Image (cartoon, rainbow, N blue to C red; front, top):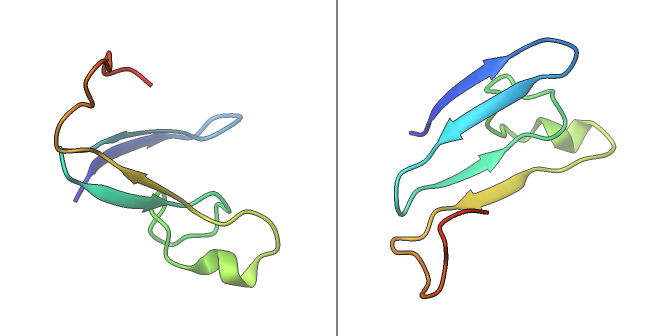
Length: 67
């Protein structure tokens, strides 16, 4: 599972560290009991669904490795 750290201030800030080939679905509704990862709670809340992040096994040719 991905390593993560969330700091709570005026707005939550989460850093997620992924390994090559890893895939995670991140919560955007802030209702997940497994935050920052999605647990499906967005189905009960109108608004934002999750976002899925996939780390490629290898960088595409020409990529600088920064998004």
